[in-house]
Length: 311
Image (cartoon, rainbow, N blue to C red):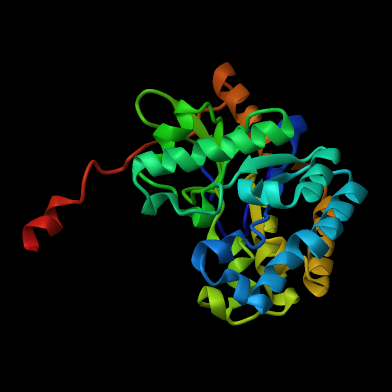
């Protein structure tokens, strides 16, 4: 039986799913290996002249990724890496190492483009171009998607379903999986939120217009650890989002390693790639063992009329 928070008279998580083998919670360390794609997107004409920022971003694939893969190899854990397809083409040796260790590669745009700033046709073009690269390099189509910068659009679900995706990991609507439906089909949503993203804790980049107050790794880990401990108590899904160029730095990655060891010592934790978590949810739904919430998209057919009338 899951622990109850002291003083609470009702479960804080109303509908936690049953996890495999009676585990208390599900955990996924996910990595968005954007590398320098985001710099070329933001400063196409001048990116090659922004040498310091380029070096910061390329630290991810060149220095941090071997370190990250080494830890999860040591722990015997397979996880999910969301890599823009341009980065897959640019850093093939890194992708080869990810695949060799049995990790999943998810779709993360082609050049980290922002879907909700594009027409439906342009969004479809970049989605398909990314699929082609992933299929060519990995030998199979991707089943999972995370919108670059969480910029999921009103058209994204339709396009993902048309291309056969089985899950998305862009949204923030719960602490457990739920379904996204467009009325003709559905896929599994595996949510996270900004507090579980290292960007908010560490990102400083003048050329990218981000100047966050930098936290000590111990302060950032207070957030990630508190979220995990609550997930463990209540049976939730814990998905963290890490960028190798940020959290692959020595002190920060030491803290990640300590967090992973804390989870393993606590026990009854299911570590899995997102594709396996989504497949587990699909089996629960198909068997009737668990019924998740269903969100219908888009939430609104058009801008709300109350504001239209006042303009």
